Image 1 (tube, rainbow, N blue to C red):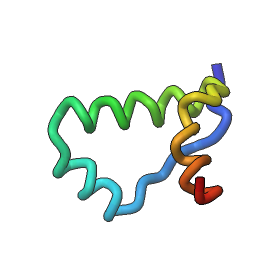
Image 2 (cartoon, one colour; image 1 turned 90 degrees about the horizontal axis):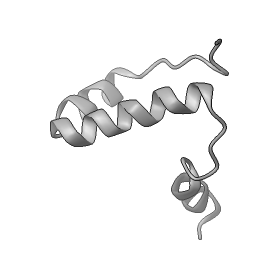
Image 3 (cartoon, rainbow, N blue to C red; image 1 turned 45 degrees about the vertical axis):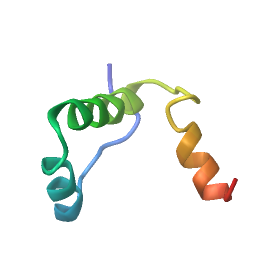
Image 4 (cartoon, one colour; image 1 turned 135 degrees about the vertical axis):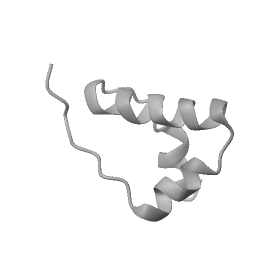
Length: 54
């Protein structure tokens, strides 16, 4: 299966992720990879609310 989009993390994002605890970092990486292949509205629900200022 081909990903819907490619992901390139900025150096600052990589540094941020490296400073997280293992469980949090793993969950973020899991969600990033999941988003590449699956359209899951729940996955970006919080990001959408933040973007809309809700």
